[in-house]
Amino acid sequence: MLRIGVLVSGGGTNLQAIIDGIDSGYIPDSSIELVISNKKNAYALTRATDANIETCIIGRKQFESPAAFDVALADTLKTAKIDLVLLAGFMAILGPGFFTDFKNKVMNVHPALIPSFSGPGYYGLKVHESVLAAGCKVTGASVHFVTPEVDAGPLILQLAVDVKQGDDPETLQHRVMEEAEWKIYPEAVRLFALGLLEVRGQQVYIND
Ligand code: GAR
Image (cartoon, rainbow, N blue to C red):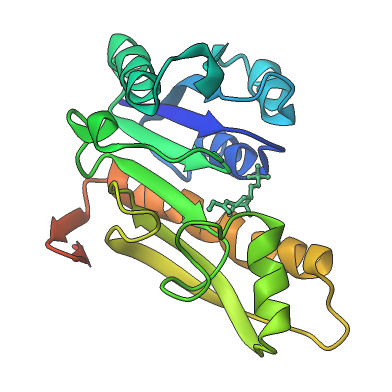
């Protein structure tokens, strides 16, 4: 049984996609054991509670330094014997101390085709605003393993999505979620659960 921990800050639609993927059997032999939010009123916490998943709140301001926050998060996940950590709209940056026990065991979904529109400052609606400002015709989503360098870890899956004339950041965000994020995130977790992902340097090989 793969024990999954999910870190959230907001609405939790990607968390929901993973919950649904496990419930339907698409993601095999896995269970979400813990959802941690750094925001106490994140709707993702309601989604977790509705699915009978344990939750806790760990906020950066509870700690004197970013490093202490990293250690508290990692310790909580280790105590829960978590095998795979999913960042699902988690709007905080994890420092090197977090990864000591979770190398190649942390995934993130990003709402653009990395390396475009990624890195520090690119999160949530800001990504879609930047895509529209650049006049892009195509955007998409990426799932990657997380390293201390923001949005720069090995890519697992990417999927392109059309930008449509008349899009605003909200319509584009919704299309990217519906057509890409809610598909490739459960798919990446499924591949991990099946033991099919192999990281070699910056490349992720999907074995079959
Ligand atoms: C998603 O679009 C996710 O890709 C993005 O925040 C949104 C969270 O939505 N994450 C980032 O921008 C991280 N850099 P959700 O809470 O409904 O899953």
